[in-house]
Length: 154
Image 1 (cartoon, rainbow, N blue to C red):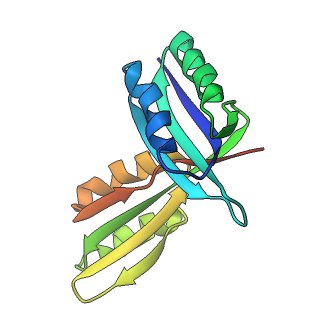
Image 2 (cartoon, rainbow, N blue to C red; image 1 turned 45 degrees about the vertical axis):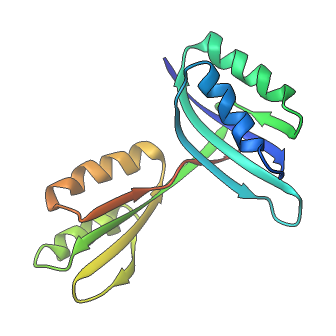
């Protein structure tokens, strides 16, 4: 099984996401993460899918994606830059200084704070986000929310 990032440019119309995700479901493959956003000043959207699978089936999915009518472009190579965002909420207590130091070392920042809670945001490559989250679990975060992967060609 390989990890694959697939970036798809589509015409922004109803049911296109259902058709694309149906290709994966029809072959029994899970989508690890999915992000969709409109492209500025156009009627297009960018769909980024992170998935895992065997080479033969993934090649079939990519060939099928090219045949879906509102799909304009499919990019799935290893020459892409990926980023992910994580939001992590902690109780504002005596451990917050250590937590802040770890977050700052990872390039993160505080995005919200109150007497009760502090919420941090960190962006980076998925494997770095995963390592940070594992490190911070010892500090008992109240909530962890990860975005899907976004990608752009080099």
